Amino acid sequence: MPLDRLERLQTWLLRGLLITLGLLVLVIAVGVQQGRLTGPRVSRKLGQLLALPGLDRPRVALIAGHSGFDTGAMCDDGLMEVMITEDLAARTAELLREEGVRTSVLKEYDPELEGLLVDALVSIHVDSCIPLSGFKVASAEETRIPERDAQLVACLTDRYAKATGLGLHPNTETSDMFGYHAFQRVADETPGAIIEVGFLGGDRELLQGRPEQVAEGIAQGILCFLEEARPTPTPTNNPESPVRGGLQSPR
Image (tube, rainbow, N blue to C red):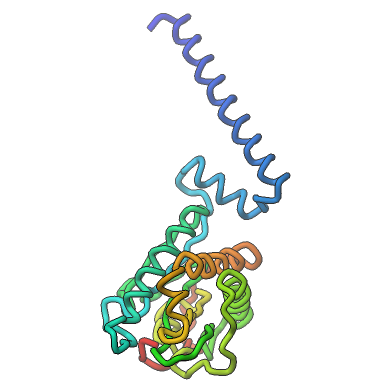
């Protein structure tokens, strides 16, 4: 290729790159001015737009409760808990991916849980078929990161209630939630929570009729945690660290 053609090609490539960067800066500036982009969200939007490997994008794991294990709660008309949890996990994952969050959907006893180190682990479940209403959120009873676990629970509780209009069902968290099996399988530095998104009995209209609101509430709770308290996980091999949870129940 003649030298002058090569120089012209390089000039056009440089101009194209500068125009692209200028447009990107303009989009971000407008988003910040209108309040749609905060600092952490800007980072994730850059990750989406540039799609470059190595960018520091948060990673989240969702467990579709009972998936690959059993049906979970089952109502007389055949509605199964796992039907709801698998649908909600898929919807929530899509919402998080749209925000640039790397998101995995795992089964109840997924082998990937062993030693899993992510920015947040959330297991999605549904309560029984009795005619009650409300949701519950809990983290591990024993944990090396109680403040981070508590912050994840707080974000999920706040954002889920706002998105769905559902009230918290207070003081009914069970030992199976506090001792949820996944809490003791993942890395000690992985913040974790389990959410019972409602009752198959009293909250069926929400769970089946407006699943997009349910997924939005879960996703917003996770984004709240990532934006306000995202830690930098550091693996540990300390054999004396406390065990996170103790029961092997899937709920």
